[in-house]
Image (cartoon, rainbow, N blue to C red; front, side, top):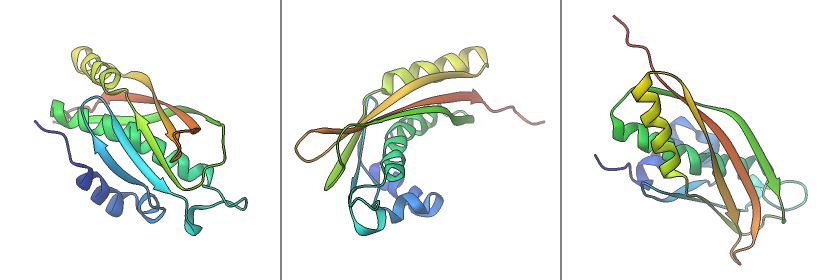
Length: 155
């Protein structure tokens, strides 16, 4: 089964996560191993200091990790619950211009999903998305602990 395209993820955000769409967060590429999401600093998503609001950076970073979770769940053709249970963030530079978030933890979530399917228990894993500006300088790093569990079958 193939992965959902960036276009499908972006349509999903339009209808299911409108704040993500309105602030300009977009999936640019996705593979089994990684996901790339961008957001451009604009008036609608800025803070009073004329840079990208931290929460918008968080939405982009979460989407970079969450899209991989969704894609791998779909590949397994299972009904599963997914939830962020913890997160951490570090900000290292003012975020202006286009910010590019990348997560390379596809293998980690694939293994976590396989474990949850194998034993029917909930499992979690930490996934990281790093945001860089046009010069390749890291502006922020986000880590999300995703919890994965098979949904109970109803009779």
